[in-house]
Length: 265
Length: 320
Ligand SMILES: Cc1cc2nc3c(=O)[nH]c(=O)nc-3n(C[C@H](O)[C@H](O)[C@H](O)COP(=O)(O)OP(=O)(O)OC[C@H]3O[C@@H](n4cnc5c(N)ncnc54)[C@H](O)[C@@H]3O)c2cc1C
Image (tube, rainbow over all chains, first blue to last red):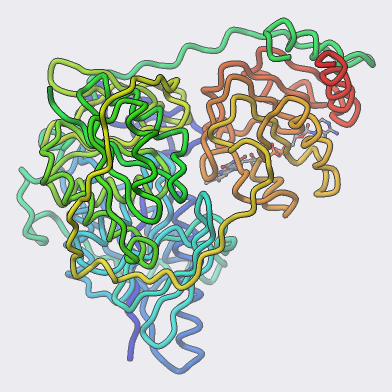
């Protein structure tokens, strides 16, 4: 049996850059460098580990990385391929500009189905939109179990198991494949691509699909048909400069005086 | 008046504070109808009513605890069909967001997550969100279907407004997907006796500068003197000095307390994402160039092992 893993990744603006909005209140991608979302590196890493485990048991496994995004998003796919994924799918279409999470999930669901899958692995959230709901939506759309926000994951005999550290409890979860999984940044550091990996990635296949390949009408996606509308975006006023003192032995007391003045004590 | 569904986050019938905030915000849009699920659901009715719920729909079944998320989506869908609300509101917990998102897909509605404020606009509810690590504030609304919105903790001060709400049984039939993901075991997190991080009025956080798990009591002592919750940077969590549940930042909790004290934290963008909307920010750091000082109302450049214990003593003295 071959285990078909699809990893959904996002190409995001560098969080340490100066992110801002374009005139149509979508993300301005021009002025900030993009990269594979760091939180999706954890998903690629877990896919690689699951595939390696599978191969150790003499089964086959194949990892496809999938992204929906502009031309530059190929960089994110290349990075995942250089980490060790086998092939990539890039869904790109001008009509996708401004698509929101619900629209994107529709495109991903169709693309995942067209690719063929036993296990879909996502990161816990994107580092730009940070909604964190895409994996749940994807499971809903695909009609398969959702095993999300895992800090530990494994696959055995057609079952995926994992640990979910929630707000009030830690849960151990289990579901039959096919399933959608998301992993957190507690799941284990992602590997760096090796030189060999980077060279090999250049020869790995990247398939490009547009909306018509997925039987999606332009009206179902894009900014105009988004399910939500941003009416305004304002830069948060810079915090007014505070008082900074150097500790000369009384720093703690000075701080206490400040807090008392603010009625915290 | 239109009704607004409010999902009640509770532990065995004890309603958590973000739900009270949610009920308070819901009243700006319509009459809150609370939905409480699982063990103790009916026990939430009195509190929900005190904060304005005109009705409290409750359902209990083993499925809610034994399987992940989907049974609750089924229940919310049933409530949605029974009430035909003007909006559906959830607390922005991991589970709240997932239920909300799946419900939105099912009822063909748009979703907004992590709102920090909510008001009624000409075309339905308008949600304020804080984006790009809180560098921007946006106002958004939902343009398709019934607005589904999740709201972050500490977005409003809970205000009581007694209403007639009493527990009514909600009829739920579970979908085929409901039993897809089994919860094999669940271990409740031990209570530290300190306030919940996301709900606390004061948060004291420690970072890499704390230097080791054995030094965190320095941070905890200050927190306890102020009745505060304890937070940690990812560097401190990754080093194994403090539990991940206490992490503040992009991949941890977002906090928005009245007072945030950062000790030995540099103020990386991902950390700021989780605390930048705090009312008053204070930092102790030995590096005068640390970016955290760009955010502070009051900063002390110095060794936290000198400054923090002195502060703790002074707080205790002042409090008598
Ligand atoms: C995708 C992603 C998600 C992330 N999510 C988060 C997140 O949720 N939360 C988070 O916090 N980080 C997150 N990070 C990590 C973040 O980038 C920083 O690495 C982290 O916040 C640094 O933690 P720190 O400030 O404790 O450590 P450092 O940056 O190492 O800073 C330590 C500070 O302590 C000071 N110091 C040292 N000793 C003393 C002393 N004795 N007295 C006073 N000051 C002292 C130093 O001057 C320094 O400023 C994330 C990163 C990525 C890529």
